[in-house]
Image (cartoon, rainbow, N blue to C red; front, side):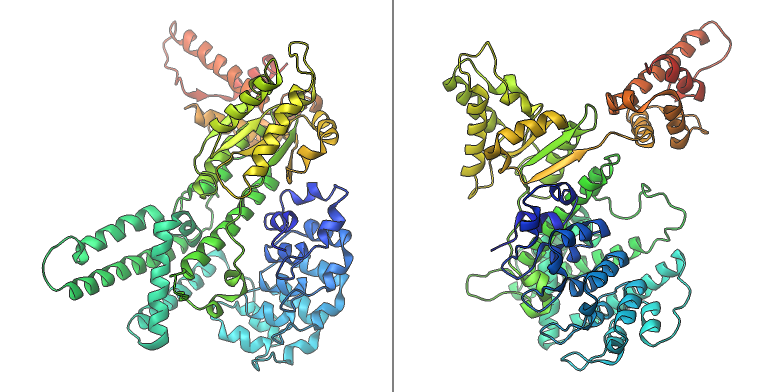
Length: 597
């Protein structure tokens, strides 16, 4: 069995907690994939939070003690993939003996943590759970300390704990940046030394350069995760092809090809070196929105969403899986003769597993009016297109009247026309629960069911292809739950459900500030998000806000703009100038009283 829906949700886990409320969740939590991994293994491999681990353990308690195909417990996976300390602690509570278990390579969880840059807190937990592990060797004859010392990137704090010493004080951000530069310089020196060497190391270097080249050609988006701007690299590679002899005729073909290859290698090494300089910028005192290094379009789009962290997390999880698959495809290209680039042994279990490029699941969005359902769906079309999951950034929003006709034949024809128009992108069906209602205008009593059946047919017949639209059903929570309960065939085609909670006052204030900037205005210097949030909490009540949500921010901006226009008109009769783009504190306070009713 390949990865189940729950395995995929564990890679982002944003929608997993909603799925945990369904009756089939305990049975799903106990399913293993073809590598012997439970969803709990997948969650631990993708740094899931404590509440996600807790939900999976409650649904399938024996999962904490169940090894996968290579003998790894979920604790091994958590130690290897830098899971949060509270998640590791929870696994130890459920299965204390897990710290004493070895996988098929003779490695304890502490071995995995020591060789994979786990945090000091995680290493301490594992040492406290099984102190003897400090002195035990794996099948390669390495103790945890040996493994940590062999990895130049291991922190001094982890080494101190493994040596039985108190860890040193935590480094400042500047010190961490300096350490990063030291490691980056060491890596660059190693790359240069490999470049001129022969034998296996020389071949590995050429294979690695070729892999980056294939990523740039086929999956450029994946380079963002390495801090490399694919657009800049594409220009550098084009210049290298020309400067290296690709644009001249005549001369020795062999020398020209060698010169061109050297120019390409230089361009890629320069991109790596530029990445290390950008990432080493001291982050102290910088806002998370400040422009540092490579601008990642996908992350920019995700970060533009206010709140909704569970949805952002799920998108990032799908992105990680996609990039792992792209990286694997580039590092292990199939040449048709059974020969591949880098050996699978060099890549480890994650990149060696051929799990196929993921597909985005069809989704259900629940939420009150104004909670951002349509805006997020529209943004997903752009994000999934950037990741290569959708063929085009098409977003088509429809409702019942766009699908239903006067008779069955007309309904089927209209629905097919909508599905064809949305092909390759996202089809967003707003107020989808209305498909379960009957209409006096339609002679077909089951017109909504006919439309639903056509949607189901489209989903089912697209299993082998990738061009039918990704379908999102949206609506209010109560109505959607009742609708889906009556139409189980439709419900089973939609694996992922996202709940859109009402916005908090702070989130509404953030949305207001974003709208101000988007419309070309700016705020008076003393005005901050916190101040606007306090005004909203004082002047409005929760029920009123829940009926409007994001519309509250739009109403507030409209009221503030009205106050700006009043000042502009007054200035025509007075001897002073007014900045037509500046919103003052009194503008917001007046709009709060007059317009938020």
